[in-house]
Length: 419
Image (tube, rainbow, N blue to C red; front, side, top):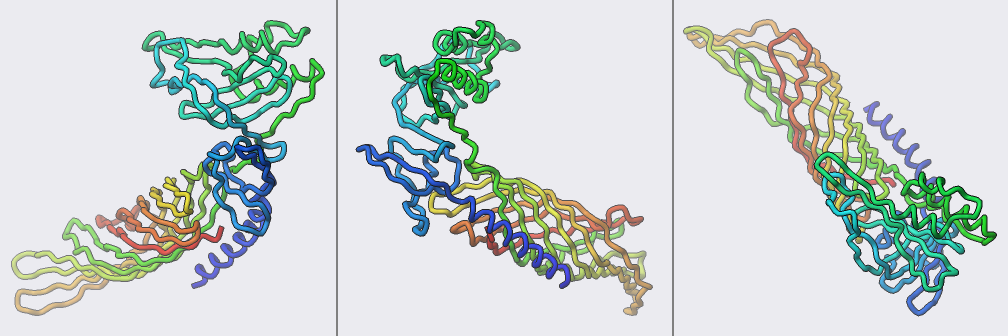
């Protein structure tokens, strides 16, 4: 009980502090512009702003969030952190994975209408677009009225099974369109196809020609988020002792458990690192029978009386839905630290119907390891249920005995996420 009270106090303290922090950073002032040109100001729920489909918006601080219908939006932004504009543009839609590179150096142009992330806005503007084949960068020059937004073209391609080459047309584009008079040509030969060096090129160009510009930080979007969940459940635990003399029967025990789960959720909310600390109660017995010669049989009775602190770490995959419900699967490695013992009693049954009990043996238990798998569902990001299975634990590990335990669990947990 002291352990349960300690976990409750720690959980309540951490939850309160983190909840206050989260409430302060959960929303950001922003706007969007409709297809007919109307500007709507309000608040965005902090999220991965690169994913337009995940945007939650409200006009006032007190009203609830609703999903923004981006099909009716031509632009949205959050201060000087983010700005997105909807445009029709061409981009190279070839594979960027090293395993699936094609053998052509030329682009596979695809036309789409989507949101571009504005990185630098000025006489020379820089944009990015995140598609299924990675992030591409785009640009245009305001004074060149006939110039559309076009991709800074870069492509890796395979010239043999072991060799890869690069098409770096973007370096020629930069040299031609955003080079200051006093810049050496050699400078552009070293610019990497990445956000930071490209932003540097465009800000330097706008500064050197004396034009005002805005550089968007892209720094206040959703980062890794800590989630804390308390849970309690009952497990059908299979308790068995394997011995060189005779294996005992697998007996079913009902073992309760309570715990707390810490999840470090990725910005996409699809993956999370997990850490769980759990208190478990174990109590029950199992028997093994075998013959000894012609005149007697032996019954070994194993009585388990223990508690365990289970420390688990692993990963989870979420199948999040827009209605805030979520299915998930996860897998963890568990270190089970038991406090208690197994008492072995041996009863000798003679052929004449008599029996006597030998002096019992007491075994202290040692830390054991296993795997833990879960399948669950949460509603409104708060209430949930999970079905969990845990592989067998050998709590006789490192003891001078030829016996091993097999303690596996199948259980149902009820969950509540504090934040």
